[in-house]
Image (cartoon, rainbow over all chains, first blue to last red; front, side, top):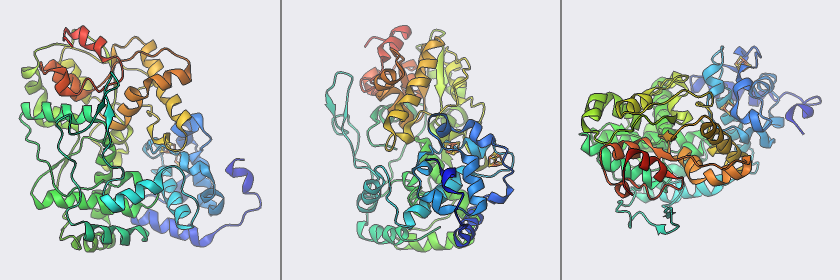
Length: 175
Length: 282
Ligand code: SF4
Ligand code: SF4
């Protein structure tokens, strides 16, 4: 089911709308209000070509304050953050950043986070990297480590205790 | 930068010092936080500002070989220079680790470091093995060209840094309509089949247009076009055989550096074809 099918009976969420506008302002981004629905963002959208994401509709629904329909949809997680929509919008609106806001809102509302985000988050908070050092294979299929390639160990936070305390504080904050 | 694309790291460490760039490994660094922006952008801003602050404490500018990290750091700088309240909040967070953020460190990505700081003449002077007129498709990585409002190092619709380097090395890069298309990488966690479809489609276009290979400057894109080329070919129904190399690997070859020192045994795509055309033994 697409997002639009769900909206006919929906009611606007004014508080979310206000918060989103406030967030865009904090990040020095143009208000969703500026969008005049030309559709240029969707015409070049990388996620639209193979999936169903339509950034101009995301902006329209944002203007209408219909957030719960979007934050509960998997569609917002299909954006590849190619930034073409923002780059090409004649009104300097940034659908990509509205999508980041919606995803943040969805997480804040306790919706399931898709993919491996939970693992990345956990890793970032405990070792400072979203992914620990990986082995690789060469063209012949032999396993190669950083060490065997002569690469130094990657850096990590030095004062782990204070790093973790600070980052965990941030994890429960909003922009 | 994903901690597995060692061909990029090896070639960067091998090539840049020979061109007069002194690389300093920074202790205490963490991830830039960009992959977590969908979860909570505040984390991204915090982690990026943290890395910038660490470099500033040593009076260094920052070389950021990964376009995604480069965007995260650039965006944090832009946001914190505009919004004093966020700046204050971030400063307080960083003080817990005795760090102080100024936002003055300059950021460089591989390509602009090569064209603007090292310079095309210096590159030419070091290149001994020419590309023999090879035509290579360039792929930059979305985050190094967009959004231009944040001051990206390459032009958003007509990036040209790698083209200049290729010409200096005796090669060229024809324009192709799919040049600015995404590699599909960000879809990998949630929609793996769609992700490799994008990869396969772009490579297929490159192959059909007769390019000798593809050259890139993003570890995520290499993970797709090089490591997942076979899978991409299967999904789009094409026999793909496109050599994919990092610009620093290619430059290293042109400078006469041994392929294994440039990590060329780690590329999964048929890079030997490309080396043969340059007359490099492998
Ligand atoms: S390109 Fe800009 S103005 Fe046009 S529909 Fe998209 S967001 Fe709205
Ligand atoms: S950033 Fe996301 S919404 Fe914007 S064009 Fe790219 S994939 Fe589409």
